[in-house]
Length: 467
Image (cartoon, rainbow, N blue to C red; front, top):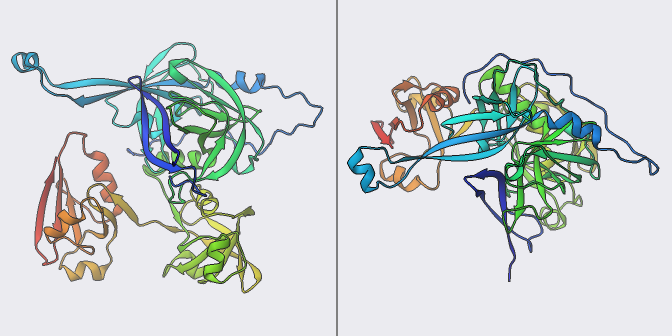
């Protein structure tokens, strides 16, 4: 009988655990499981130090705890959900909307009141408030959020200079290194637990796109968005999830690495959205089974099955059949080692790859390109349309549908919408590129209908209204 664990996002919502839609089996070898740009605040330089202890040293967590507890805050999220009408609602004319409160944690990252937390802590917020460790409460503004990395940025206006946590370089964190988890589990403020880093580049979704730090420090509902710090009190990660059968901690917790979290919030501040640098390869991680199928002797690394045309990888000379062994001096054993490092990079950044080709190791610098694709709700994956795409439908602007969302593909195809069709407008706003689409979706209020204008396969303009 298979034993099932569930990935739990560790925010508390009205006393009920918020469960992610990820399940994996212990029998499996590998778990299968934004807003306008604001002024960029000044961060303290990233620390490159790493605490080291000899066998004779007594490990002291007190300094790290004292430096962190005052910079970790309690986040309250009030959402509005539509319930069923009661007879009293009907006769009084009262709305059926009901307020529901969720709680989590956040980390102050500079003295000006910028706070990092998880996206799932603040998702669908109607009201946001933040309570400091000194019990002062402030209304919080959502600066921006990124669902893919589960990172969000808040801002409060405090009359005092706020304590904050300095970012560590999470690439320097080592397996076996001591860490502290600081947060507000079960609404208990400023709770500190200790553990070690159990693993890095942990992927829980089965997509190999995630790259969590795994730790055995106790994390429970309410800890989401809290700090994972090293013994110097520097931020190594943002506590995000646990795997559990009960909804409470059972020994495994996961944090978004600080390098990824920092990059995401700095992108939100500077650009208003996340800037993803694209390598331009398709492939998969090697193991003994895959190596035998492909006919190679390497059992570690990422095998390149295809190179995207006009990508940075192709321009740098990366070839099909190459095996990526390192990126920027970081060993690549699995795909999430690669994607985790790339998640902290931007377009035009240069990464240095060590690849194995015909038994020889080659060092190849690659300039990352801009990601021109975006997964649009209800529709699927879209990208910037090229001139030839627009000419095909006799239009001068729009974005191209690359892949239809599996859940809605049948509906679209019945209405003459296929891959390759062009979206020209969202909520009466012309869209000329992916950034226009993201901006239009950000500007749409929660209860506003989604109105689309799409050129169908016959070249006719169709209008759709989703509520």
